[in-house]
Amino acid sequence: MDETLVETLQLERLEVNLFRGTTPDNRPGRIFGGQVIAQSLLAAYETVEERTCHSLHCYFIRPGDPTHPIIFEVDRARDGGSFTTRRVIAVQHGQQIFNLAASFQVAEEGYEHQAPMPEAPGWSELPDERAMRREMVEKNPEMFKDWMDRHQPIEMRSEDARTYFQGGPSEPETASWIRCRDPIGGDPRMHQVILAYASDMNLLSTAMRPHRVHWQTPGFQSASLDHAMWFHRPTNFETWHLYAQDSPSASGGRGFIRGAIYSEAGVLVASVAQEGLIRMRKKTSLP
Image 1 (cartoon, rainbow, N blue to C red):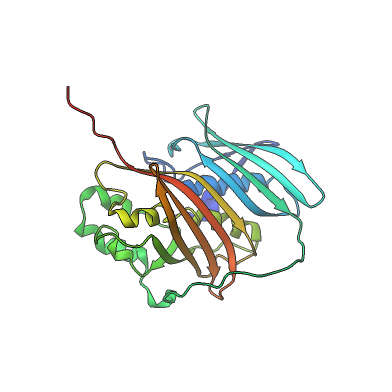
Image 2 (cartoon, rainbow, N blue to C red):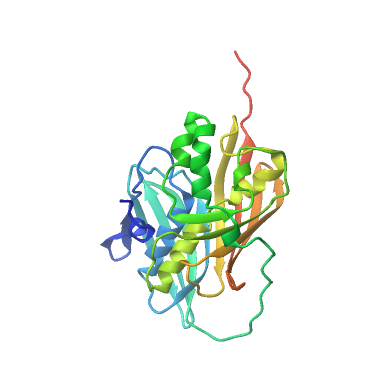
């Protein structure tokens, strides 16, 4: 039986500010960026009491190796009257693969406003993307089959999921319904951690849409470079959320994407921004 995402993300405390995490699906490749974001935030939370993360900013430095543990080192940068700041460095093979800065705040009341949720088909009107991937397994090359049939801890439903490998250029905008497949429990911090995990999904593919490329296009290179997230309101991520994304710019081999995450009731719970590498490999001339 597959372990739950809560179990997957758990850390072992090695020292006061030092933690170790693992990747359960330890086949060769690279670690999903959302996993490192989530485990880094969880490591920071292990050093923070009675405060909630309101923002995080991070850089992907090297590809993560899923066959080896990750060491997370937390720097207790500041504990102030209202805000707490933490920095987390993720290390493998003696080198940084990722770093994160996060800010935590005591609960406060204040002014409130938010952008309205964009119009989109309801989640109940759309098919499960995992089921569609399984349908596509027999129709795509062998190299895609293992990737498509892997367990997906985040359930996703979107209007154009069937066009992943097909179709022409389209607008750099997407809207998907997402939620955690497994129970998360009553700790609001863990709901936030798993929302951070899911926030790294589909962003770069939104920037690819106008250019008729995808992850398996021959010669195409893509990788997340940085990631930022702002948590506006607490939420229950066992329920459906709309993840609306748009990419206002691509240039210099990089694509920039913005995201907004709404509860099913239309409450804006988080905002996301990411820049990533999207480019074709340069052709080298033969000797």
